[in-house]
Figure 1 (cartoon, rainbow, N blue to C red):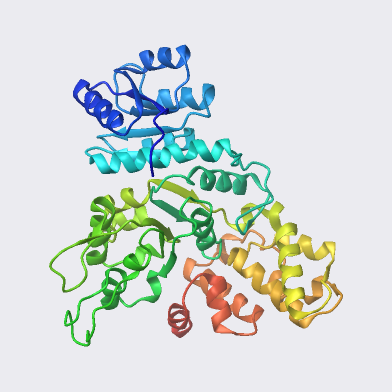
Figure 2: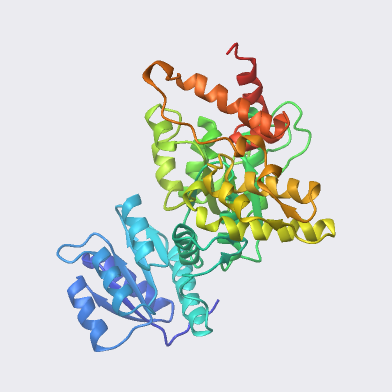
Amino acid sequence: MSLPGTASVLLVDDARDMLELLRRSVNAMGLTPFTADNAVDAIGLLEQGPVDVVITDLNMPGVSGIQLVRYLGERHPDIPVLVITGYPRLEDAVQVMKLGAVEYLVKPFTQEELRQAVERVLRTIGARAAGAPKAVEAREGFHGLLGRSPAMQEVYRVIDRTRNNRATVLVTGESGTGKEMVARAIHYNSTSAASPFIAVNCGAIPDQLMESELFGHMKGAFTGATTSRAGFFQAADGGTLFLDEIGNASPAVQAKLLRAIQDKEITMLGATRPQRVDVRLISAANNDLPAMIRQGGFREDLYYRLNLIHIHLPPLRNRTEDLPQLVDHFNHRFSKELGKAPLRIATPVLEAFAAYPWPGNVRELEHLVHRLAILKDGAVAPSDLPAHMLSPAPQPAAPHALMSLAEMERQYIRQVLEGVGHNKTKAAEILGIDRKTLRGKLKDPG
């Protein structure tokens, strides 16, 4: 990409040597640099005349870089901001991205990394001039995601803010909330939408194979490796790699993931030289990674690298205002697939939906509406719903009737099994566990 020579860049850094290095680098790109060694002077320059891009350090005495980014977001929202810092902290990165920064670069960086980051920032100018959307508030859906609730509007907004950067993203939420859909929305809303999107379920790959699957292997690297084979990182080169259930990664894989993020290179099993990869990494977890860190099961440094941008998907029970829209969507989709008229969902059914806690979240709702579309024609009444959905809300128990946590879990598993006709696959999906775990719980003498 040839950089437009008319573009002007305001450089802000309290370290004079870094400021001079930035000035020379930007000048070599054919851009017009302006410099300020503090945020106050930078604001003065902005008031004298507009610039096309701002590149600012975060840790500066007096008015900080975060305050400058906030000022730009409020007074000059059309000026894209590239943040650079030698002291990366997750909280700062998340804050400046929310305030409007479009790129985040950690010192030390190479001339080429700076050039590529500036290119990506400059693309946002063209996108905005062409009328690219700046906000996603009040949307009913976004790249396959559905919901009008404030919680979902915030999810859409954060996704939209990631469109022109390659920052790592961690998506959290209960099983069935749609974490892979968020990853796909991020990818297809970005400038890399035409590049590969590779989704990997780390929980479905045996520990002894995960390293080979992710990074590839050379012929003879292990018994049975009769040919060399590329891994998921190579397959996703130039695009996005989505790692679901990242908490299942072994310590060895976690170490290699950390290097892949930090150095942007991987080493195939059996290889002697690393290879460069350009992959946007999105991870997802439905377990408590901070708790795993405290217990020694997950690397803290990897967690902060993966969690530069954090998106939390709310459980369905916390956004019941989205239920009518979701039900209508699934009803029309499955009815169309079956070649029949949409079901008529009675108001008492929607009320039952709103009162139900939805442990399987949107996935459970989708399966339920699909089953109703297959089995029913015309109107759907509460009597058509599974028995466990119509159970009266439990009353506070008397002290002598209090159950242990294990007994409460067993009782709930029994209810779910009864509700799905003892189909263990569906029950496991609703419970957010795999069949192996469910089988173990069913073997429990309790």
